[in-house]
Image 1 (cartoon, rainbow, N blue to C red):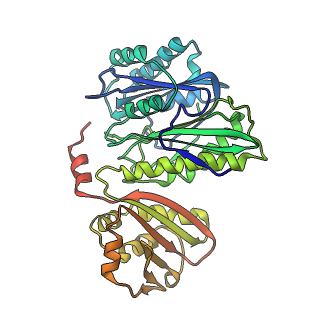
Image 2: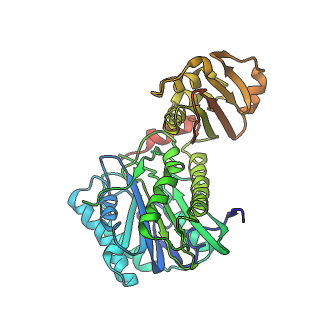
Image 3: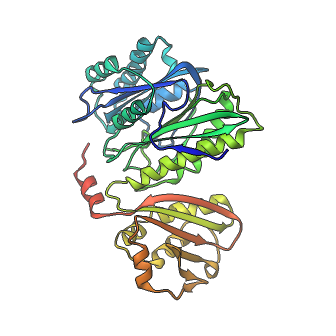
Length: 408
């Protein structure tokens, strides 16, 4: 059975999960505290930002990650609880305690996340009020409500679910994400021992998976999705991704069927990744960069991400300029050794550079292709079989305006 997307689905689409949100008044409007609950517990995998400056909720959640069972994720928007010292750590733990009391579980079975302005102490009276008022439920409306609650400068909520049959059992993966600026995730597993728009993603599934296998799957999938998207190249202090498996579908993922499940999780993560790039601050275009023929996959990623993070490339695409020179120059400074005479570049399917020199193409045709909201850049290296795909957006006037007016 092929993968089927549920566009209105989300974290409550898989069996065994409930979700809800409420308003505490941390943000200027709307719900700002969300709660995802695994009814009967779940195995969990987690990856966190590798930024050396880590927010309090990242440190607390990393301490809770080894727990055999996870019952809930609580997240607030409007305040990052970062660079807040010991009091910030106490407040992150208190958020976990409030949820643990609410659903009758151990504090270590609760993950916590925050997103918003840096350097401000959490208004715990508002957080506590919201947690007390949250009513969790299942269904598309609950999924959408939680996705909306974690938005900061996001213009749209980002949520989706997908299903496929594995060994005769229908398995569902649901997910939500947020983030449109300060997006250059670099997430991995952590040893437990002035920003905005952090990348957060919460994934759920009703498959049954032991913890170590789940962690391996998450790390692999994140590398090809969330760690391959950029809006501005700035890695947040709060970036986090969780994957919870309830086991409610009564199918165990093992070595034999892992590839099918991994593909399902990857499909959800890539769709969420595209939603992040498409909604980038001030963005008018979603840009997909495909690199092939590199010496290795790692080399291909270096090239793809260097091009994706280039302000010159991103501004040219905003202006509709088929500037192959900026793309070639970015590829050449990625730290990968290759023969420039083998380099090829296509923009929107039109060959603009090949064999070390510009290809013959109609500029008007290329400019027309760059007016589309979805733009594909294909880069061939000619040095091996390494390949990678990255996603980004253009840089518009609004990106500068949004970030010039944002403050800590």
